[in-house]
Image (cartoon, rainbow, N blue to C red):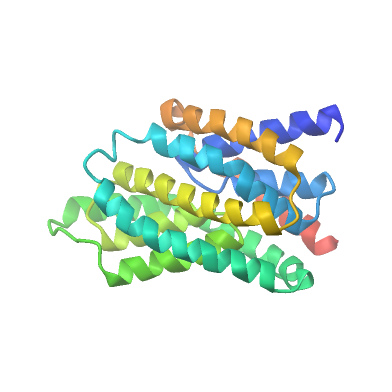
Length: 253
């Protein structure tokens, strides 16, 4: 690894950590960077999952005020994310490498679409919070959907946070800020579980992991403290542009 590769990966991790905490989909920054630098899609995915895990933990800690008194509910959802992540990693490691590389462009495209519609999802959730006076508790349907998102996150992490906020917004009565905090906590669970499995039985670049881990941890704190002040359109614009570029690059390989 050259010094400038290291700098680019660190900056990508820093930016991804910030974006993951505020919007989600930081993988759409780091994954294309790693592929562009010559890493295979599989190695980029596994190294990315491990490297961004500290950033998701950092972001969750940054939202601890929003989660005060709500940890029992978070724990219930975390169990679903835990088992979903295990299934997702098994799926990734069981399918042929060619199958993953074939489906990756479609997954990147799905993630880009989710990022584009994220403002509408957030607005809908906020409106629903204002209009709905009912209290919705965590039920089997929500747990099942969080489990399915955990499978997706264990297989390919991009935009799992957007999916989480969408389903929780439909089936829970909490504020958008609290939902964002829950999203960060569940994303941390998925990344930690997937990363722990990948670390032992999947191809991983440890120098990449180290750079992403340091960058994303710092970015997680930036996102929790001052990231909310950054224009959301700018954040999403970067994600969409980088994601589209990645999809084109993967299709042309």
